[in-house]
Length: 99
Image 1 (spheres, one colour):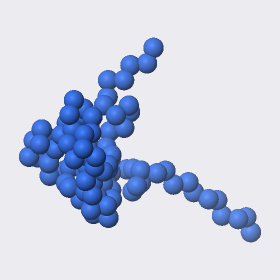
Image 2 (cartoon, one colour; image 1 turned 30 degrees about the horizontal axis):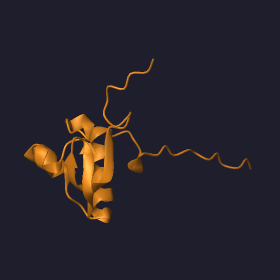
Image 3 (cartoon, rainbow, N blue to C red; image 1 turned 180 degrees about the vertical axis):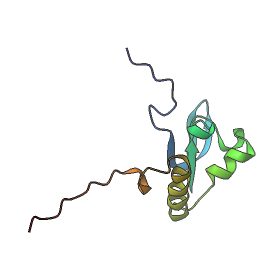
Image 4 (cartoon, rainbow, N blue to C red; image 1 turned 45 degrees about the horizontal axis):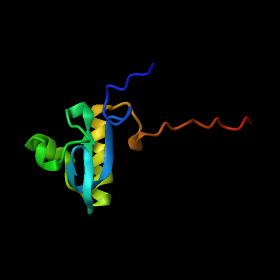
């Protein structure tokens, strides 16, 4: 039996398009042109509307343009996990060709 006690089914931080509003944990009224960072490690929850989170979490959430959101996401993940590669991907080393 798998238990998912973490919101978002395993992710802890995400850059997502900002919903117009959240009602009972679901986006209502479509989405805005802005993006937001939701970080469960900071105490945020993806089911909460922007208006329902603390001022500190609103500073993390944004809103951002897509380009600014990507930069803020990378910076935020770097603060939480300094050893993780930027962008969340593992980079593989390609061995040099033998001479």
